[in-house]
Amino acid sequence: MPQPLNYLKETASQTAGPYVHIGLIPAMAGFDIFEKNFSNVLVTPKTPGERITLEGKVIDGSGTPLRDVLLEIWQANAAGRYNHPADRSTGVVDEDFRGWGRAVSDFESGLVTFETIKPGPIVDKTGRKSAPHVNVWIVARGINIGLNTRLYFSDGEAANAVDPVLNLVEPAGRRKTLIATRSERAGKVVYSFTINLQGPAETVFFDI
Amino acid sequence: MNARAPIPAVQDTRLNRPEPFTPRDGGFFQRDHSIHPPAHAPGYKSSVLRSPRQALLSIENSISEITGPVFGHNDLGPLDNDLIRNYAKDGDPVGERIIVHGRVLDETGRGVPNTLVEFWQANAGGRYRHRKDTYLAPIDPNFGGCGRALTNDAGYYYFRTIKPGPYPWRNYVNSWRPAHIHFSVFGSGFAQRLITQMYFEGDPLIPVCPILTTIPDKDALERLVAPLDLNASTPFDSLAYRFDIVLRGQRSTYFENRPEGN
Image (cartoon, rainbow over all chains, first blue to last red; front, side):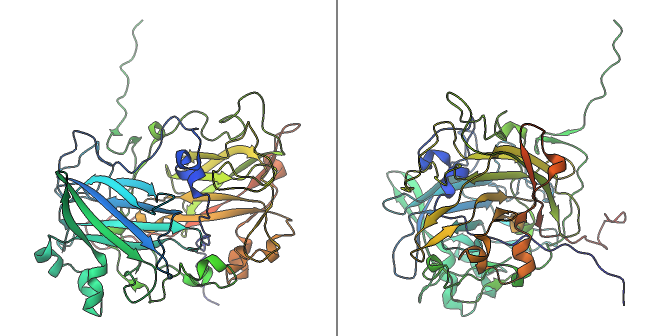
């Protein structure tokens, strides 16, 4: 017998359930408990970068928006730098911008929104350049293991066309499921997205 | 008084936590899906319309997946890990007082330091403090049912609460959830993000739970069951349960500006 490797096994995932709000956004469950709360607002008035609203829904296999879904986003700052020690790229870190936010859908409409800035393009340590994107993680009742996807930006066609991850998506027609559409509303920039869990327009989900 | 000049602590203020911190910047170990529930698990009916049907697209970890949000003690309040006190209005909540403790580890067995662990649960009667929960068991006026903690340098966390009760739910007409506590864990990279549930040793509802039995691997299921840990109990006060959580391991970058390895 060879030596045992003795790796541990990852803990199994379980659904976040219908009451995920209690632990992660208690105000949405209907009560106030923590002194400090996490939210869907990633920016302060000082945050450098173009202010954007990310707005969208997650749709189930019957075409109905999920009204009990929780999304988290993780993104680089306007200089393309993640606020994390493993990112040793040259962009300036903005100490006030964590780059992470959490939101639950509206109980009626299913709408999910984030107030953030548009991230810059990302250059990793091998010099590989990625188009600006936001990383998305989705949990809810009925979702047994968190779903990972990305949002790219509709006005970034040139960068999107050479993005190494988008180019892995086949057939190419599915790439558009990862693109948020830019519009302006009352002077605010809004990027709209739809995440389809099933069906002909099923969003591309990643095994990361 | 001739006070010795204090040794300045090396602080990475961006991380809001003290050095030393050794970043590991390889990708995470490939996820072993055989120990996780499949997305589509028809016995858990809610999964039927909410499960992707296309294959997941496997991508090598880039900096977007290797990094993740960093939290610090500034994000927490002093009672956040004490569910007996953090919502108490005019007394202690009703129920069995328990301590839950354990370590957040990665697949190599290393503790995951300074990572955020969040938890939420029903009260002793199986009722959640949530606007959508209509179960007939009463709300406990002194129990909120959520808390959070940051692991220490060894990956250790603990909190105090009351043991949650089982409750019925709409799946089959007589489906009951075993007593459980929901856990949300971050790790150091977004690819380690995990939500799971902790169950209690000896609960007869465990083998018949349609959610728990979505896990296809018997050992993986049993790793969600916390044993009674009498040695960690507080005599005449609280029993204790031990729950270790394992996140994905991370590769080292052996041959690239890292002669020291890690």
